[in-house]
Image 1 (cartoon, helix red, strand yellow):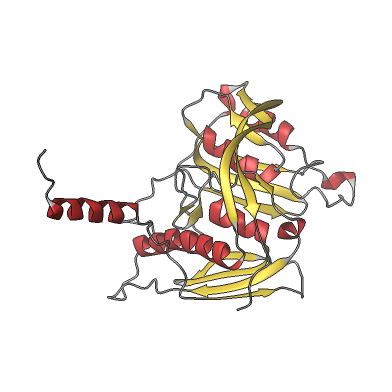
Image 2: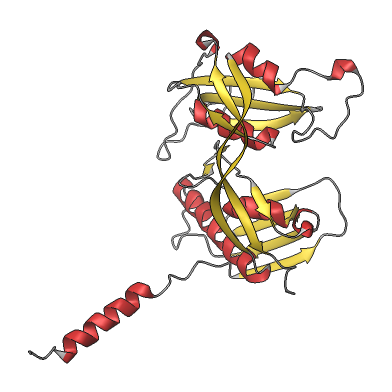
Length: 301
């Protein structure tokens, strides 16, 4: 039997050791966490400036959604507008993760060596921030989560009138040549695929330009809550959406009681059918969920 070369054995063992070594997850250089006891309606979660993550009056549940709650294989951010497709159901964990509120300030060096900040720099910083937030939650809250598929109640979205799907003008986003900001009095630039959500009185509003059907389904799933909306339309084109509706029972924001009947506009079900020719039907389906296996109240700063 021929003898094995000891140098070759050492090389192979070293290679295996390197291959099996876990890659260190990026972390903030400094972070402060404190329990918010003041309360109040103001909440914020995100990058207040390049290299500074700020979370004010947020629950751990909100922070988990920010760090992990993006459906597999998708990104949740594009420069200057919020992309569709944020949020998956979060299951498990102690009750306090949805009750206790925290203020967090964390910093890291996100400014390029030459000091020249571009849109690519900002996007890179946002991607880094999400991974660093995961590290922070796992370290300070001892958070452990995993993803799995579960059969849950859903809404199946069907197309009943394709003629109602229309598209206005929008431009494709180019990070190398961003469109100039519209001057006062001029119409704002609309990027294809962009969507924005907001509140008007008791109502939710959604404005989207050149949207895809899956994007609308994902965005509404996040807004109305309770059930994931599954696209069953088969429609592959794009369209604009300008929706306003009053949240119903079990939907996000339904705790506010209208002052009068005149304050109620319409449900999301009727608005979708009247304006976009879409119908939501209750059903059951496989949904990706995030399961909280462990969470502890944060360690001291």
